[in-house]
Length: 201
Image (cartoon, rainbow, N blue to C red; front, top):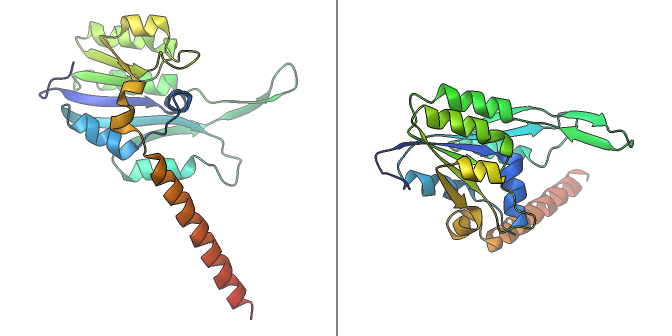
């Protein structure tokens, strides 16, 4: 599937990958992901696409975005739009498909193998366009979640389908790491609170 001589680029639909990995019950370790694909060929670029809700004082995705930005990923964001649907419910819309497609087409003369982390059927036309330019496209998503997170049209169009569940051991975060990180954060918060109490005297 991969050739060591290939120039590889990763295109990660952040929201889609998050939903797929959550459906499989694991978190992605993005450092392991880079190492995994660096071992498969010459990893030229790794892009991560996500929409951000800008009006929130704190966004839970902001630490991840910052980490990715400093650790080998090109992060592409745009503000999510908030709207109220016909039934009066608050909804957030933040589609990054166009940005991803434009960036992929700009690299078509440089990259040999595109790896798309998304199951969104809207990318079928992009995959076909890249293939017409003589490029190989692998799609990473999952059939094993309920419901499956991969569009049948996209899976059929791709040169290779990579089941995300099969990458769990390679790119999944160890659950013990998360628990240790949460414990360290709680300790740090408690220590900061103790320092603030001392400052009050």
